[in-house]
Length: 137
Image 1 (cartoon, helix red, strand yellow):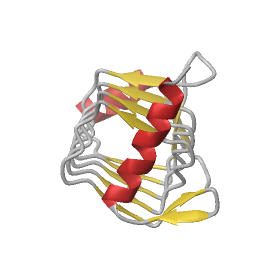
Image 2: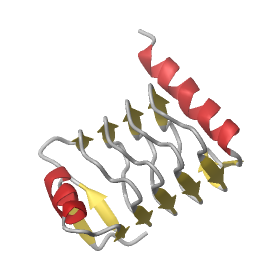
Image 3: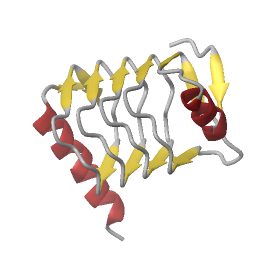
């Protein structure tokens, strides 16, 4: 995976507001070690080969978004709209999803610790289990 562009949450939001719906080889960065994106709309966006490792997305509208070949290891989705989203050929080790809308999610060929997760129900179960584990003191 070659990262060509680093974007802050504000830059990502500005690009979306300006009409951009396709992001390739992007890394989310921030002032903190682990970037955070919250309270923005990224509905209908396609992310290809993006680096979202250890990022937190909170209250982000990812409705109908596509994630293809992205690194989503240790990524957290909390309170997001993921309805209609598609997840294909992404690394998802320790990805967690909690209190998100997940109607009509599709998932295929996701990698987690050398195994493959296929199908939305398996993916969502895996992500919800990670969120429950993370919430346990």
